[in-house]
Amino acid sequence: MSHSLATLIRDLRLKRGRERRGLALAEGIRLVEEALAARMAIRHVLSGPALETTPRGRTLKAALAAAGYAIETVPEKEFMTLAATDEPQGILAVIEPKQWTLDDLHPGPRSPLLVLDAVQDPGNVGTMVRTAFALGAAGVIALPGTAELTNPKTLRATMGGAFRLPYLSLDEAAFRNWARDKGVKVLIAAAGGTAVAGFRGAILAVVVGNEGAGVRPSLDGWADGRVGIPIRDGAESLNVGVAAGILLHEVTRG
Image (cartoon, rainbow, N blue to C red; front, top):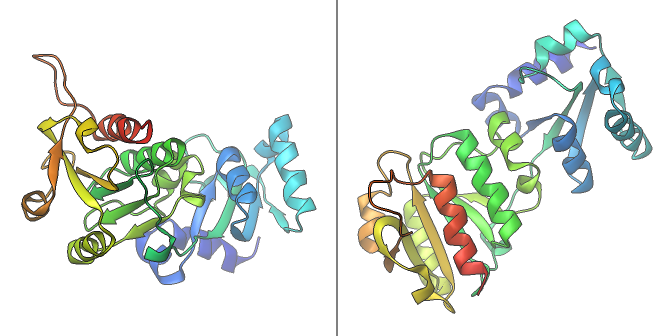
């Protein structure tokens, strides 16, 4: 393997490297399968011996080759130094993430937006992107402080949803201006909020907040309402990803 490719992969494990190069890493059989199926721009493919040990791995390697991608195979020890997972599956791709814009967002009464306000855990962010895609959301907007989508852990948790669902990073002012211009009602997920069923039929953006602090006060005070999920007395609050999934389901089921 060339020194330049190894340097690129190591650089993309860092946030500043991903931001500077506009690239990201997709690691693992499922994620690379999804990148290929979604016709992502794949710049490089690196494989290790582990890929050949399963039928699914061999099928993926053949599909990549058939699609015209050059696959660089390296020894197991070398692959392990570049992989970010504890048990690498022998496949890693350098991809160019799609650059979504506000024009790609088309929310409707049964296709809300999910807004993440300073959700810091990459696993939570990835899980919510995966859920939003599965439930038919129109897209995801990330406000400042939210874990970046191209973080390798975030991407893996999306299970490919990040390759198909519009995802934008905006500051609060830009989001508020866009929501007002488009007639989108903004609802804050909060304990004690009303049932989301009362807002069915409207075009909605559901905002979930930081795992500890919740939604920032400036946005909470400006929003059109607060929605919540009834839980039994004595129960702890729900994980932010679980809460987002329940609220999105309530909206998208009509």
